[in-house]
Structure formats: structure tokens, C-alpha cells
Image (cartoon, rainbow, N blue to C red; front, side, top):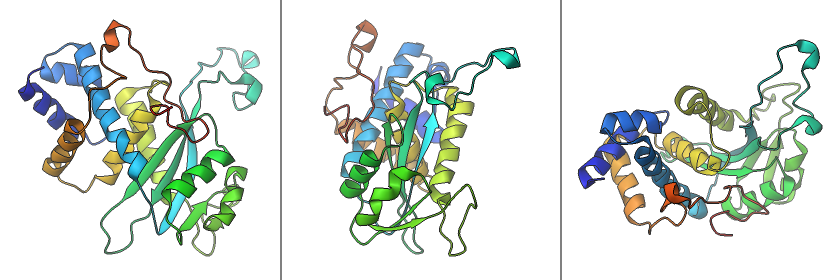
Length: 260
């Protein structure tokens, strides 16, 4: 691709609020689908590197969202099974564990930290909070047992969603739930599905878009250029269509799949 096409591709991507599909970008640039796909994935890989340096503070909402691994239900009702049960899972359904910093009045920044894991897990939640949340912060979580151990790390407040969306004292997880709605819109309306292998990069890109939704397109473009130009040649995507495929980008025991 020429440098002019690269700039145009970044600009088209920045203008797409909910995300950009490779098929649409290939039509806009007049290039092959494969070229557009690798281009967008390299952009997502560059964006995902910001997660390693992110530190959150203040009021932080934590929750996990299950996504991917859809199985088409059987036609006849009597042949259908409850996919919520562990024995009926296909093991492709993953969890986006998310920490989201609630913006205080007068402080413009927003930060959303994502991590794709197998399922909501107490060890992953504990490690994520310990590494990326400053002392003295206040955590909001739901009733899931994975967040019980966070009591010793930070000030923890809980809301039982089986009984209420918000406690009388105002404790809720609405800020992270609003991010999950953006994930769902991108899944259904833009990409129609997320590859399990690259789910971590998709989640990181959507988090970046959410955090920069009030930033003008020009600054978003310069920020994306900085991230792309400061990255070395991608070991994950170079010669992708010649068979060089990265492993599944799922965090295990707090270790990034890119740094394992």
C-alpha cells in the first residue's frame, strides 16, 4: 500500500464511530479484502499495547461480559439444550474482563482496560486490579464470586443485580455496562462476529474508541499514527496470508499472550 492509501485507511477508520469492517474498507480503498484485513488488525495490535501501561484511579467499575462462540439452536424445541450449562458449552465463548474509570467532573480523561480470558476468574480479577489500579481507589462490582477477594486490595462496594440495578447508596456498574453495549453494537452491526483468536485486539480497539469519543478526528488520527510508527514489524501479522498465524490471544494467569 502507498503511504497515501495508509493515511486514507486510517482516516476512514477514525471516522467510523463503532468500528470499521475490512470488507467496507477494501471497497473504500479499492484494495483486496486480505490487504484491508491485515491493515486493520495491525492497527488494533498497535492500540492494544496501551493496556500494559494503563493505571486507573478514582471510582472504577469492574465486570465481565461473555461473547463469541455462538451455536445455532436446533429447529425443534425438544432437541434444544440449555447453553448456559457447562456441559453444553463449545469452549469458544470467552469473557471480556473490563475495568472502567468513571470520569470525575472537571477531569476529561477516560480509561477502559480490557482483558480477554476464558471465564470470570478471581485470580485474573485480583491480578488485574493489583497491577492497574492505584491505591485509594474505589471499586464497584456486582455479586459474582470472582470479585470477593478484591476486598483486601481496594475499597470495594457491591450491587446484587439479581435484586436491583443500583443500591440506595448509588452503587452500580453502569459505567462498564455502557461499554459492553458498545461491544454488542460493534459485534452485531459492524463485524457480525468476532474471531476468538483476535478477540483481545477487537476489545482493545473498541475501548480506545470509547475513551476517545469526545476527541476530534484529527487528534485521533495523529494518536493512531504515533502508535503505529512507534511499533516494530509485527511478528503476529507479518506474512499472515502465507501461514504465519499467532496463537489465540487469551490471557492466562495474568500473562499476555503476546508476551508469553
